[in-house]
Length: 604
Image 1 (cartoon, helix red, strand yellow):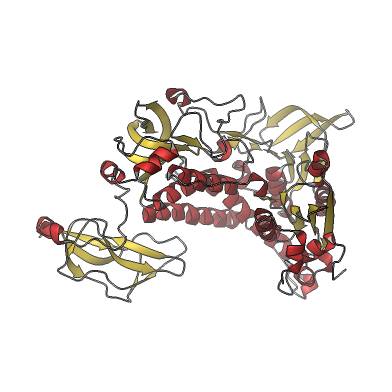
Image 2 (cartoon, helix red, strand yellow; image 1 turned 135 degrees about the horizontal axis):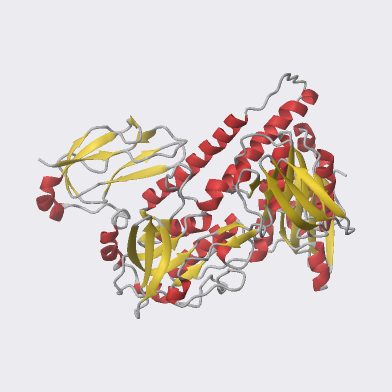
């Protein structure tokens, strides 16, 4: 008897055990490949365990209700009996798509996809022979979400990702999960705890002496969080039967029937794969200063700045944008003397002016030194430091000496070496791929999302575009209102906004009213010891339609979601003012700011 074991799939890194729910088959019954045998329940999700091959369920090792762990054997299937048992097998109520781990099986499953979906989506028809319905190049927030959504819609999906960590281990998640959003927020939180332990506890009656920094442990914690989240994406791919193809994705051609060939290269191993639709989600990389090599030791970009082996005494940052402010704030809290050089004459020019002024005041009080309107000259590095020559806003020559330098002057799209010309595509002068409102490129069946296309380079914008494109491929008609995509700067206090600023509305000639309410008049903010900032709302002067929400406050990244919902549903400021908000909570300031538009704030 040839047997194969059924094992518990890899659980999320943060989950150690699961409860085995009711078995859907009994010993002796015929089973088919990918038929769901049992469900596992964790404190986070419910997982389905598919049958690994055709045959007969020979033994159930773990009964209903058992507590099980990853890679533990829970059943045994007799595969010798598969020929006789297969005809009698009863399909599961909700069969999964063909196994994503076996590319060869994908064409057969894909042929069942509705032809209307492929035709409506613009890719090759379902009758065209291909390995997959959809190939996604890149597994960052846009790419992995696009892959999962397409799989949810019944498509056979593969995702090509080349990322490897410092140890050479392949990783999913792209820049965001590996060296961007997730690790930076982990360090931000750790640095805030360190500063709070030093300076913020005495008022609460908590006396702490001898606070010391263990930077190695701080970096280790950050790395562990990255491991959990990248492993989580891998788990989601398995759950949704998305094939992970390891390597660099590059277009090789497009056939007359619309089927696109993408080559995946991992070292000397190169393999071609075909798909009816391809989504480009290759993200972006840090822009570097011309003539200034980044070694991520003395001169760092966002990647190196997340892994310093010591706190520099003096830290220089070029660029006072989102990354520069966030990383500069991290190292200031940990003890560095931070100086930020910004070429633009205005601080946070994209932010509403009232918020920008408040932020400049708060950051100066915290100890960040920010010079605006500078012209960077020669940057000289030496074994233990760096010298930055620059002209200040008045045109005077200045020189800044620092132990380390972070260069944060923006990002550029990853569109080089994609073989775009092989399918009739090209990037514009700035490296972006032109697309329409639904992220379609000029070539039918090829889409581009996230940092490689127009619009803000934001992970959540990429995610929304990934969902949209998957649904377009499925023949649906989704839509994104880019005016309703929120922005966040994770400083302390946080800065968040959605919609229009006063300056934009003035330029449009639109009449408006504003309402503003300070956090220091909020009981919850005072109780938390975080009274800095305010919330400002802007509404149409005639219709009261909410046009913009602007926040500088603790937890602004969470508070802004209410503003996003309001803008999406074309709410009036009065609507937010009429809604009951819990007391005491920071969210009450949202209501008070909305009431202030009508000049009727209740607590001020």
